[in-house]
Length: 569
Image 1 (cartoon, rainbow, N blue to C red):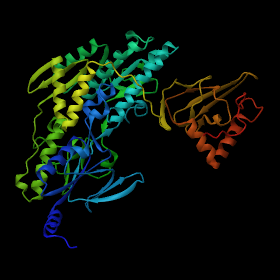
Image 2: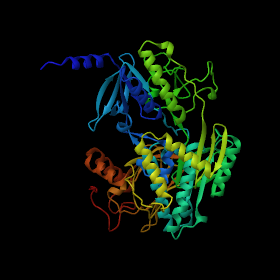
Image 3: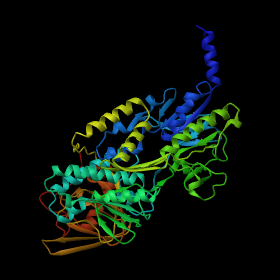
Image 4: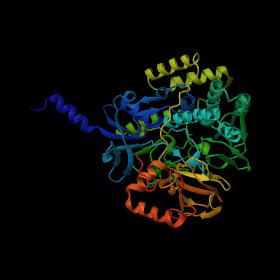
């Protein structure tokens, strides 16, 4: 049957609409898409692409990490939030500005799909870049995604569990020392919430006392919360210290390992927990677009149009939006990377884009907004606030902080669920359930000069490939009193003897200089080595040449010796 007149009119009307593609589901992208769908329903079709199908309310992640709220209380499903917007869960793989198309990868089969657009909005945010600090990318926890908050919470509880049964005082001190690097909003709120979780939980751990706990906040600037007035920042520092948190300012982080963090003043702090809230940088995709950038952000005009590209817009953390006619190199002359600004940017960009689509560019307005204030939680029902010029501290500031962020969360259901959780938690003890996932099969490990990689008697856990630096391997044969010493340089490896040796290590490995290794867990290494014939033959010859076969001084011996290469199930 042919189409009715109404269907034909609807089809023609849809064809007249411009296709707007929004990349990124953060504050800027979500509120731009929401405003476009509301104000331009007859003018544009909006599609938002995001790697997750939910919007993350990042200011609440510290509470998720502390177990104060559930992860579902800090996220909102995009499909429920963005009525009138087509939501596509996919990863952006590339942009062709000439063809006005975006390549995304979606689904379990990872199929590349080409999406065309009339107008493109880039709101991909930033990523964590800790590459300037040796060892920090490998050993620091971050606070960017919901999964980061879960990982931090489980890590803290795991440290308490291990410390409660630790037999070595040094190991116990290391397990109960927690370091947060960076004292901006995220760092201060994270250290406050984690400290509160620890002190609420230790009553359930009989061998851990308050005096055993050491929590540190490290900030390179001269004071914490640098965007706050000095008196509020000083109050926050005093409040944190009263809660037992050591606040170190004017000192940066130099490097890190799995067992310690080194500061720029030479101090070495033994710890198994480093949380980095510093190091925001551009995503690799954004860097590869060839756009004009400054300070890792895309340059845009005051209407948020990307310089040098028609029909391309940018906002949020990824965009450098000028607030003055000639901003120059003054960071204060550009929109700050905060949720408060990103929301307003989304609304204004939507209005400007609709005006441009309708050919009414004279109606476009430069982005202009003045912050209504700042709030930061300090944990334990205390906060600091500077709102409309009024300064508050303590409990009332904390209530204002909660009320402000409750109003900021999009969606009534999300607001109601979060409010109920807050009320319930006021009368309930902390949830100490530890749900551990499998660690990565491969990972990089950084060792400082003098670190012990492993020693005799430790459980053999994996294969180590030296990437940089130098290690020393020593093995004693108690039956012959012979002693083997070998230096391991880049390209050398250790742990291959697990294929034919007992589970316990017989050697001592020490870092002769700062060293980077690639580590593969035992099970996956054994699978790979067994099922890849070329690799299997290589290791058979290597073990024979390096350690000798049966009856040789350093050959694998013992009742648990396996005569053939082990195949892991």
